[in-house]
Amino acid sequence: MPRITYHQPQGSQQTIELDEPAPLMQTALRNGVPGIVGECGGQAMCATCHVYVREDYLDQLPEKSEDEEEMLEEVASPFDERRSRLGCQITIGEDLEEIEVDVPESQV
Image 1: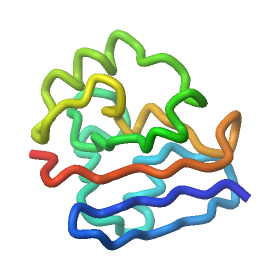
Image 2: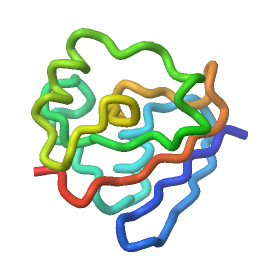
Image 3: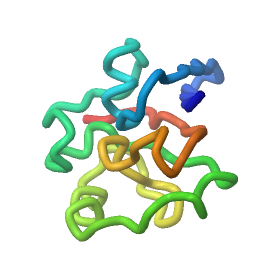
């Protein structure tokens, strides 16, 4: 079963198991994960679903699109060239069965 673990800045974590493939951002919103805003609804137009992907999962992700790269330049928390991604652009349950991410201190 696909699984996402969201790690909060203060140290708490929330693990969500999915019944079907879904974007990381939508899963967070449906389950009330603090710190994921998703203002644009998953269109890669706002950067309010910014996350830091944990090192063990980076090599399993697809490359960033030009749109994602552009939006990551606008994140509210520090940008990490390697780990920063938009949660709306990562789908769990297709080619990726598990992921752990750190939620930034701020999205806006």
